[in-house]
Image (cartoon, rainbow, N blue to C red):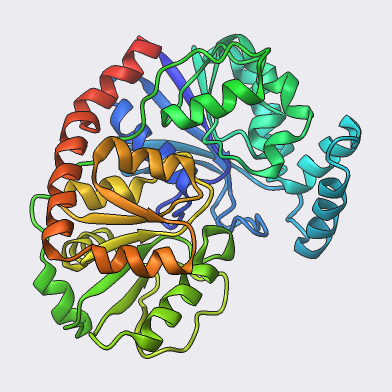
Amino acid sequence: MPKVAFVVQRCGLEVNGGAESHCFQIAQRMSKYWDLEILTTCALDYMTWQNHYSPGVSEVFGVKVRRFPVAKPRDIASFNRLSDKIYSRLKTVSIKEQEAWMQAQGPWSPDLINYVKAYQDEYDSFIFFTYLYATTYFILPLVAQKAYLAPLAHNEWTLYLSMWDRLFEKPRGFIFNTPEERDLIQARFPNAKCEGPIVGVAVEPPNAYSAEAFRRQYKIDEPFLLYIGRIDPSKGCEELFRYFIELRSHQTKPRKLVLLGKPTMPIPQHPDIIALGFVDEPTKWNAIAACDTLVMPSSYESLSLVLLEAWAVGKSVLVNGRCDVLVGQCRRAQGGLWYKNKDEFQVVLDLMDKPVRNQLGVQGKKFVQENYTGSKIEKDYLRIIG
């Protein structure tokens, strides 16, 4: 049985970041085929990287997790100032300055780095989830000959730092989420051998979920749009709030916007915006079943899991048309529509009457059942590491 390490910046039941959830879901599936453990830090909060979990080995839903302390939490104000300086000199900034930025980006864990240096020979393969953090940048080169990188990349300014040119030439292979992500990486790194499968993640809804239970629990009778994820300007939430409030200012028929997730920004006080915070998995699936349409306003995604989850239960989706990945998902699934501005947001919602929503949901469900089953994802990973 191969011994495989997954490397990710943080991991735990309370962690709901995209890369972290992706990593943990794959780990749960592949633990039955591999002697697998997740190497990560003790951090919970991605803004400060403050140590939260105890260092050492624990088991999370059957997955071995080996955590190491973060040596220096991130000073957010200082890091933001440094990021502004780097961004303003993107084409001329030195590698030394970029690596100092990467160390400030974190999470910075010398104990994790030293562990991999000392015990790398005990592992047959390493899979790194997301390119963006210090856990990948400083550790992947140590084990490059047996490293695979799932970049989870999107078209953001950090991808154009020159320090990545060397890193992306090092892995033995890549694991991509979508054709759009692969094409982006190939265009950005023409000298890298961007070889690897497009895999994604498995989506299998629970055997039972109830729209009625959700509506009853939260006393929501009206039709509603549903947003699931971190409530953050970087996820397009600020724009979503503006568009929705403008829509409600002249729309007479009832409609709510329900938010599931941890807020990192103020949420407007509005009678039609309902923020429920972080909820458990059964509640999430009940919410998806109850909504009219799931909305994903982010401009930067490498794969949207919540789109797949919405389609898995036959729901339509509405996405930001400025994100090639989300539009690509909608086109392939024929399961959603998109908007690029406030006017299109309103027009598209008017177009999505019940017959249109139902048809998009049916097509999306078929797409997920054909492409994102557990057995298919497992076979894809087993082809990478037997």
